Length: 136
Image (tube, rainbow, N blue to C red):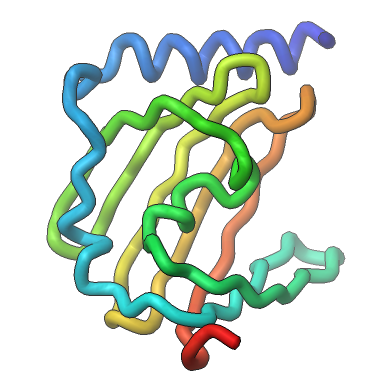
């Protein structure tokens, strides 16, 4: 692991450990108002890059928190929470971890920013998630 990756991983781990809400279980009141179903995830690329679009069937809106660690069982900690915003730090042990900030615009539209480490490499992305209908 390069020094930069190691430093990022240490920073994420320290953030989780030092969080004043470290003993809180994940509460999801801001996510309760979102509608389950098929959602379109549209990445907002950096200048000069192409953004991807994918659809995902969301039964549990907390799936939006760990988009890069979807199959991992991770420890989640609420960093900040309000009626329209949620910030979560999560640690997936050897699989990495990250922080996701979700801003809720409507029950069918959210803005997501996430960064961390997955598969030994750093990631960072911004995307818009929009409910487009029932799951197929």
